[in-house]
Image 1: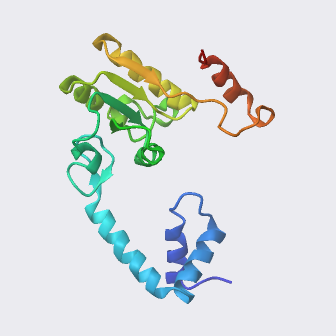
Image 2: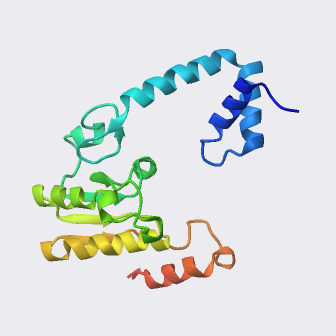
Length: 199
């Protein structure tokens, strides 16, 4: 059975979302059309508004509807520490921990020569300009613990090496509450290499 062209277009449009396959998109489309037409209209309206009004913060490059995001505008943030991340969703993840009070810089991805993504595509030149123009004492490289994330972190560290700024990398290893027998070898190796003294 084939759907009407408009329904098929809706299903196809919903597949642009991450992890949404044909069946999930079909269920969403029918739910919105049959059971929640008000929700569908509200979703359509706010989606159009968000796409039109949300851009990137001029300073840290996270998503914001203002020229400067709330974090960059805040006077209570520690402006001597800069955390470098791959995406705006990573900013949210770190903010939710409540354990960091510095500033951020979002790269919009990681180095990937195979995909043709180089330093100029990530805004690393903007990161270096930002570091030169401010009084940063420490840069925390919080890129993902993937091959590309590690390569990106090492590339940035090499670029700022001459500036005399402390460069640190987030630790990764055994999760809190995890059991060693269920942790993969790569994670255990990182945990062993990043061990610290208790006394």
